[in-house]
Image 1 (cartoon, rainbow over the protein chains, first blue to last red):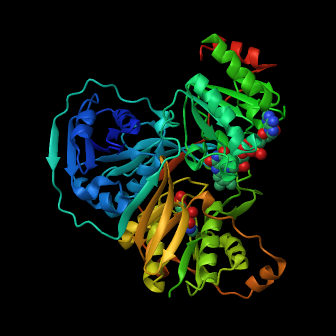
Image 2 (cartoon, rainbow over the protein chains, first blue to last red):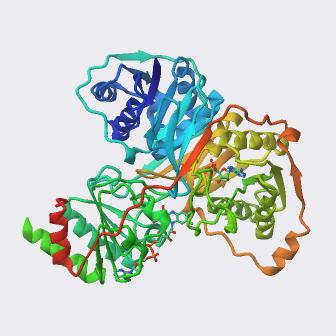
Image 3 (cartoon, rainbow over the protein chains, first blue to last red):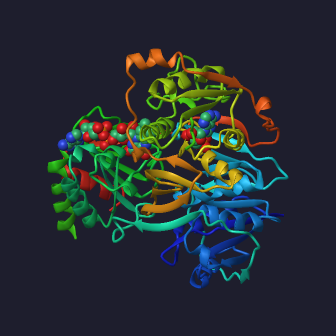
Length: 316
Length: 250
Ligand SMILES: Cc1cc2nc3c(=O)[nH]c(=O)nc-3n(C[C@H](O)[C@H](O)[C@H](O)COP(=O)(O)OP(=O)(O)OC[C@H]3O[C@@H](n4cnc5c(N)ncnc54)[C@H](O)[C@@H]3O)c2cc1C
Ligand SMILES: Nc1ncnc2c1ncn2[C@@H]1O[C@H](COP(=O)(O)O)[C@@H](O)[C@H]1O
């Protein structure tokens, strides 16, 4: 029997959707008992949320004041101490999981599988490399623990309806004080979350200013969509860094992705390959984005975007 | 004051459209342009700026990989690094092995900072910095977009999913770079000449005392990703809306 431990990601007192996606990825192993580890200063409500996920055997809480922020250097020794007895240790391929999981793997003396996109068996997985220009099948050595991060865009969240028991644990691990949280700032906290939104309106260098990005926000509001951006738009300061979509930004899988004034560089396309419908608006009919767009429109976004917004609002 | 170590991985240039070999054994590399991993260029630029502010004694660039990685190390020397070390290994190098190599070099050179890329754009693993920090039992500041040194400490702004996060770390530490940390400098012709005279040493895993892994994660095969195909073209916003409705997206 396989025994898997999923590390819960949370912020502002809520479980991140990535946790349910990790559970569903792990379920792909087949014969497996799944526990969820919740590290927090106060784990109560989070543990209850985790316990409600379907197919979970136990929720383990590690409550200590030091766990209030997810500092990898602080969390990793505790999770490494907890890892004994598990065959699999999974976390999400978000900045949280990508920061934490390799640190645990190294403490356990094993390699890590990044960005699992499909599970072939308990020890065989598929993952993207070269900005998703190739997919590799990898095999972890049987007999040592498999540490992995899960590409959340590849999995549906696990169903609810669970009633797993919650157990409070205390592990003995000396925690370092060499790493201290100072602050966090989120520019777009009041908007739909880019990683989970069903619709995303994304802008590129063509927007030419932060001011013009407001056009996208208005269209996004009409659609109930999140806003995204290309790296060029972020680098130029038109959009906040957390809006970057692509190989080195966020990998997303919305129902609708609208690329407005984005050329469609490989590094950008990596981030949207799993979107159900891709719309491209670009004034250059040769732009590579049209090779992957389900619906393409050649034209000037500065006339098309306001017009589209008006038509959408008129329907409502 | 102490040195700064920087990782320089030789990878297929980011502008190349990578193709999988028909037999699934890897990707096509024959005649393909190779470069320094873009994040490592940023790591080197950051190290050079720190040294230029007289906050480090020297910048040592390290590559683990094929003989040919000497080209990328020469480029790094031309950018301004003081000396280079190639740990020659044939075949792929897993992040855990790379981290073990960096650990040995850290023990030898006692740097205040090791600056690596947040990910290598070939394997897209994004693990080495965190693994080194774990083995070294030191802080890690991943996805750095701003690095401020303050004596025995550093303040690092990190690009995280939620926005920007600032942490404070004690030195020595490992920092991994995000794209917006800086813009790497261009190399001038005289620097290329100067770089030819700078020291570039070659060593092996055995000489460093790092075991060649026998039991790591194995790659069984490479496949081309499923491709999306070109869809329909519409001529204006109204047609676009109609097409969206037809697909049931609105
Ligand atoms: C290591 C590395 C990692 C990277 N990671 C990412 C990543 O994660 N995400 C990412 O996006 N990029 C990434 N990039 C950058 C990527 O290679 C491209 O440079 C970037 O995506 C280009 O952004 P863009 O399409 O907005 O700009 P451009 O390529 O300049 O395209 C602008 C487009 O707008 C069109 N246009 C101009 N005016 C108008 C108008 N009025 N109306 C309509 N269309 C108009 C133009 O025809 C053009 O096609 C990375 C690069 C590297 C080297
Ligand atoms: N073989 C290598 N040679 C030099 N540096 C490396 C090597 N592998 C990884 N690194 C460093 O670690 C970073 C992250 O690599 P990875 O964990 O493979 O994505 C890279 O950007 C480099 O700075």
